[in-house]
Every structure is written in structure tokens, then in C-alpha cells.
Length: 624
Image (cartoon, rainbow, N blue to C red):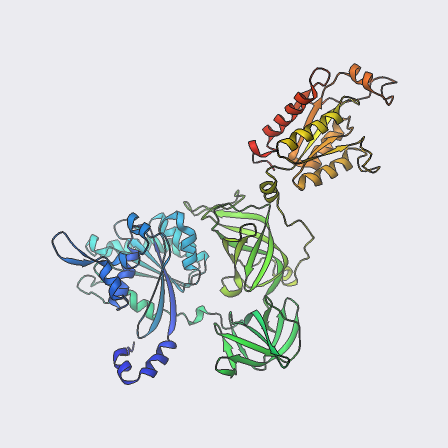
């Protein structure tokens, strides 16, 4: 490998040095590992030995030992947060930049603790290489496998496994070989393009920048720096599939109409036939404008402005591609999600995603499975994702998405999930290879549905919607009790509505029978209200139908006023031929007798039953 003396080049050809430095290949890598495996020390040593540390940083990291000698604490070069130094661990993602005559580098030093998985995912999202450290004394830990699994899920192409602290095991080759064999058995099941192994001592600087044959005569591979300088990354950028998300439309005058953005992948040239998605309109590229002027071609990740031969309607969020190379267009996607929100994923609500330059609302169809970070097994019974969880989630978008699988194209295969109530980013998602590719390319119509989830309604209204059905004989006092309960709920700050067959405001037919009445009540419950129903449903079969329609938010209250009392109150002749047929409920939520109980106390008993069942917030249960 030919190395250039950059100091000599600066003295003889400063413009040549600047141009060379600008054109150097950039490699991003992320360091991961268990706590105290030496990640920060490795980076500090790498920066120090490549002259990438400023004088004030070096001074801050230099300390005096008990014997009066000065030594460099390499970990302090990257651990900049006070909380990190107090705990002796890395919490945030620390980014550092350095360069050599061969390449430019951006390092992301990520946390090792499991509770900072979201931070690790953030640092790894754009990395070419994942550098995992393993303590030679401890061997391959569960955390090591966990980080390798996450790196594979995030689509990092290359994995470098550094067996650190070899100085503490006397540079024993057998220990190194044992760790390599153990780790390879696991890593062979992952999706890395390459997996390499290195014996190092970050503290002593062994095999970091310079080889040390005296310490590791049995190792003849590259040092850490040599690996980073030579690992092939040109193929990591997708240059075959042209993808151009439009950021804005530029119209400085009537004669100029350009579409500005960054080339996410691929190459575009003048004269190329293109298609605009999701509209499907076609045209030809006539100009490729950059700061330097009109160019013949552009490639990822350049920012350019394209001009087309035809006046077609294009706006922010549209994707320009080659006409013969289309991505998927569909409303349904399955993605690997790293959940970053303090509040768990709510499958019942909708979220906003930012995909390329578009913001689209999506519904959560289901959580397919969650990765158990302890066993690395798939938990198929998971119904949600909590902070730092990783799992596969199926989404349905309200508008068509234009995408590629993440492992093929990072630019169009990833999106972030945004909580529309708080406007905070709560998740990062990598789109998986679709199973039914033909259906996703064609797209599937999405029926109209509410964009407000039951959880959002409950948070706003401080209650869960539900159906409370007052069952009893005619003239038992159900209507009076319904309105008394409504008044009590209102006084307590909860919202309800009464469905009463005797109320003339309801049109004929709406409340005729338990089925139509329950459909109306269920819709009110879906809106977050408590529907109090005082409508005849004398048979157990009718009420069973109502319970089935209303779901688990249904509660039955038995107004058990004796038949003789009801007959005496009746003014409609319903008892002229005897007591009407009525099936008493077997397991009501509450039983009240309005012949012996005051109306207000009966209303309190009904509300107590509602609280116990979780229909209102003060004693809220998980039932919805």
C-alpha cells in the first residue's frame, strides 16, 4: 500500500493536498462491545497514534500516577460527558473524525449497556464497519452476540472482531483461536459481507496502528488501522439503482424549473429516461445542475438539481428513478424496528413516518415478533415494543410508499417513526424484503379508517369508551337511572351519552332491537364516550348479541325492580296480560333494586362497577 507523505505535499503543493484530501474515500465505523471491553480506550489510542488528538484534548487526558509518572488515559479522549466519567462508561454516542493519507474516517463510539441499545442503533445506522471488542479474559459474552445481531439487522456490511486485553492473557494464541472459533459459530448465521478477527491490546497499542511481532509473532494479519484503510467499501454504496427523492422545486423565473435533492443511490446522466413515483409519469433528464455548473452526470451522495424535458407535476416527497428500474410501490411494509420512545409502541394508534423526504401517516397492523435480547430468540407472543426493544412490525400507510429493502438500499429502505402527539422520534425502521413482491409493486387500496387510536382518545378524555347496558323489566326505572348515571359521570369529569328508547329525539328504527342500538353505542364507545343504554332487550340472546358487537368494553347492569312494582308504575299497558317475558342476566356487573334503593345511591353503585371494570380512568385497567 503506497502511502503519501502529506507533510511534504503540504509544503510543495498545498492545492494538490487540499484536492487530494477532498477526494479521499470516507469510511464510517462504529465501535460496540460490553462495558469495560475497552472501546473508548481503543478509539483514544487510534486517534493518538494517528495524530488525530488536539493538544487540549491530550492535556485533559494526561494524568499523573501515584509514582509521579505521567500517563495518557485514552478513554478520556472520547468520554466527554461528565456522567460518563463519573460512571466509567459511555452513555451517549461520541463521534470523532480523523484521517490518514489513505482515507477519512468518522468513528461512532456507542454505549455497551443494554439500556442504551437505541444509542447504539443511532451510531450504527450509517456505518460501513462494526468494530466489536471482546475481552480476552471473558471470551464471547451474550452482549457480544447481541451487538453482532443488532449490527446485522441494521445492515452494516463488515464486521471486525477485536479480541482486546491480550496483554492480560500473555498474548496466548490458543485463547485467541478459541474466541474466534466460538464467535464464528454464531456470526456465520448473520448477514455480514465479511467477518475478520484481530488480537489487540488497546492500552498497550499492540496491533492498533503498528504491528508488534515480539508480542504476537503468530499473527501476520493487518493492524486495526490497516484493516480500516483497506476494507473494500466501494460496493457498499448502491450505484446500480438510481433513486432521487425530491426535496424542493426551484422556480426562480418562468424559464427555469428544477427539482433539487440528494442522489440517494445510483447514477443519473443527461438523456436518461426517468419515471416519477408514485404518479408514474415519465420524462427525460436534460440538465444536471450543480454549484460548478451543468454536469453530464451525478451519483450518490451528490446534491444536485435535475431539469426535465417535460412539464410534469412533481413535488417534495416524489421519487425520481430510471424508467426501467422501479422500486416497490405499496401501502404495506414489514420493517425491523428499534424502538426509541419512552412510551411503548401502541398497535392501536397511528404514527407519522419520515421516509426519504416524505411524511406519511401509518397504522400499526401487528408486531410480528420481538427479539429477546437475552436469548436472541424471537418472541412471537409480543404485542408491543418498549424502550430499546427490537422487533419486526407490519405497517399500513395511508398513502403509497416508494421503497427498496433496506439491505439493498439504505436510502430508500429506512424510515423514522414520529409520535404525532409529541412530535418526537420514537423509532427507527429498516424495511425488510417483501414476501409478496407483485402485490407490493401494484399497491393495495387502503380503506378509510380513523387516524385517532383508542389510547389517544383515552389520554385526551381521561376515560375509556364503553357500553353500559341497563337491563330490567319495563318500567323498572332504567331510563331514570341512565340519566342519573350520566349526571354523576359529568360531575366527576367524565363524558357519557344516554341511548333511551323513550327519547323522542331518536328516529324510528335506530334503537329498534339490540343489534342496531348496540351498533350506535359501539360507535360512541369508539369515540371515547361511555354509552349508557336503556333499551328493551328482554332475551339473553339479544344481550349476548349486544355484548358481542360491543366487545370487551360491554357491561351489563341488572335493574332488578320487582315485577309488581314495575306493573304499578307502568302507564303503557305492558302488564295488562301479565308480566312480559324477561331473561334475568346471569353475571351482571351490578344489581340495583329501585324499589328499595334511592336513585342517587343506585347511580353511585353503577359508577363503582364501571370504575372496577376500568371504563373510567381513576381505576384504569388494561381493557380497552
